Length: 198
Ligand SMILES: Nc1nc2c(ncn2[C@@H]2O[C@H](COP(=O)(O)OP(=O)(O)O)[C@@H](O)[C@H]2O)c(=O)[nH]1
Ligand SMILES: [Mg+2]
Image (cartoon, rainbow, N blue to C red; front, top):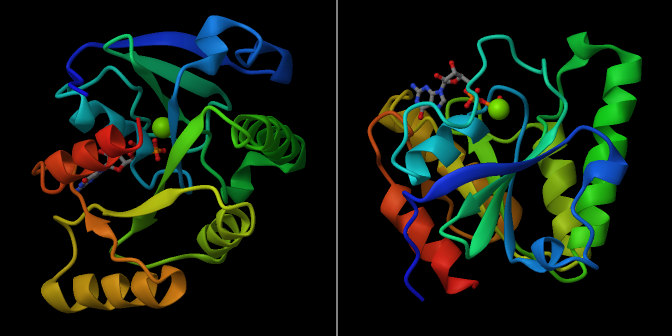
């Protein structure tokens, strides 16, 4: 299938469970590729890079500020789903609860059908966090297909980069895709992975 990633449009912003697109409606059944990772890991930047944009998906300087699930329509063919970031303790208990409720609801309902792939972002400077590991365990248990994007690949030196790649591989059994929203490394490879699951 040909997908023009440059045709991107923010279509749905869900801040509450009842705002998530219902699988009973046509838009709720469109194939979805979700981006998961801790706050500030680079999810929004990666979505922008995939679409060849600088600033459509909001890149925040204040991590963890917004708790919404954002659905970006791509070429009328799929949604890229920007999930709220996890693991941002400063957000406070109430906000943390709202984060996990919204994310859990989305993932559990979408995983049954329309969720075709999760792009799990892991910072390749620091390697996988405990929260990353929990997310990977969850996807493995539920057989949710995922790829790992080792992101901000422009930042670490070769030694740290290789160490993160090895850790990710040991954890998941799969090779991560090294990506950088800054240099464009790995963006084409990730687009290919997305097209494959449609
Ligand atoms: N050097 C570098 N910085 C990045 C990259 N991707 C994101 N960032 C920076 O990391 C910060 C968080 O990015 P953002 O996309 O908002 O992360 P999100 O919270 O996961 O959506 C911003 O300051 C970005 O400019 C990358 O590939 N390389
Ligand atoms: Mg973001």
